[in-house]
Image (tube, rainbow over all chains, first blue to last red; front, side, top):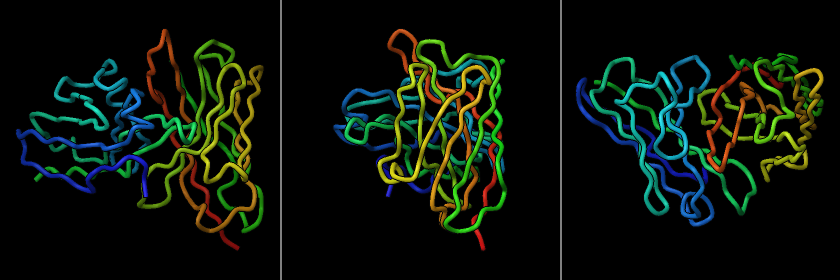
Length: 111
Length: 123
């Protein structure tokens, strides 16, 4: 059971908008620690998609955006494309565990 | 350009100790704010953080695996080594190392990952 909770799967048609939630607690997201998002395409290593809650590394399309409120964070993807079909993970730091924590991952299916 | 590459055995027997090496380039692990972490992913399952070592030799471990893990760095060789004792078939996974940096209070996450190395635990 992951410290950060994500929905196992989400889906959307090409061009649509989807969101992926990441729910934590007062010892991680709620404590103000940064939330990061990673995209893992099939058979590849994870890639940083969003850092520090809402910032995109260079090269990441602005179709991807992140937000945080209270003990939760969200990843939004607009203008869905077939190439967005992947697993998405949120990650933060947990003060009670004194280390990094990941969500259980969300599989995005583009219909 | 930052790159990391994991190396180590592809097959280990139960009860053996696994030693993985992360060899990196493009940064120094003696630079303030820099760290290298290890993360694993069992087949078809989620990412699991294992350990992290910082430029100042601060070390953090997953509480559930802390008794079995040791992370060390060799700054002169640009390497980070992870040792995991008493391997079990449930430890079968792809093991990744990744670069981490915090600058001026901003946490940039695990911004560059290695390609991963697959480890199978079987007799």
